[in-house]
Length: 194
Image 1 (cartoon, rainbow, N blue to C red):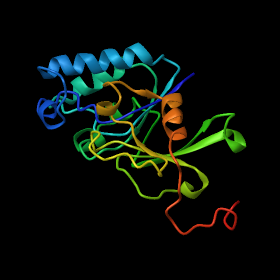
Image 2 (cartoon, rainbow, N blue to C red):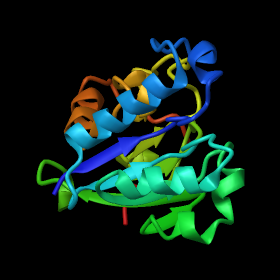
Image 3 (cartoon, one colour):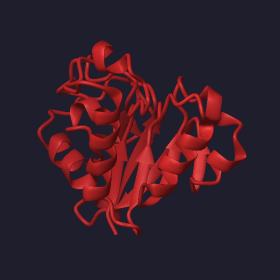
């Protein structure tokens, strides 16, 4: 089982090609490339965390059929453009959980305690739960427009940054290893250690 992250697919959104400078001629080409990219990487027993802004289809049944075809055990963090499907029970049941924010632990023997804590939100944060202890924060929303902070354990996992496909946990881990982490909040790591 592998763990994947993605965000801001904007399936069915013609204007995102122009807004985010995507390399596609039309929306059908973009949608097909993203679905193919997902299916090429994610296996049925894998876990996929989707950090919002899934699809813009006017017909919600088209969104539902698409996410039924995408493999993996899917979790959703709501994005600002998910309002039209947020109350759709048929859409919500395609996900193990749908939340505004998720605080997860991914098993990793390289991490003290055996788990990497990750806070998932559609939006980038400056500080988050356990950030001073090395927890990561993954986000979307910005389509790669925010400069990466080399001192923060945060990262944009949107499709615009990762070849229009989900990014694997190990890819995120390798990117985090390249950072020179410096906590920015007032917490003293030893004083607050639990």
